Image (cartoon, rainbow, N blue to C red; front, side):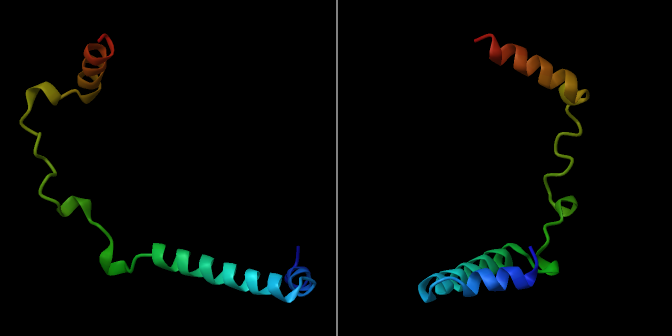
Length: 77
């Protein structure tokens, strides 16, 4: 569907329908505008204090093994 086809479809609607299309476009524009964060607000997880808090835990050296054992214990209940 081309831009011209879309415009023709909108103009073929009654005035109330055209107003609804315009309102919907404004709603979508606002929704997507709010979801885009400015570059300065991007979360940098590498700078957070929690990174590395479990580095000295011997029971978590092999995370795959740890989660497998945790699942076996919890799922048997």
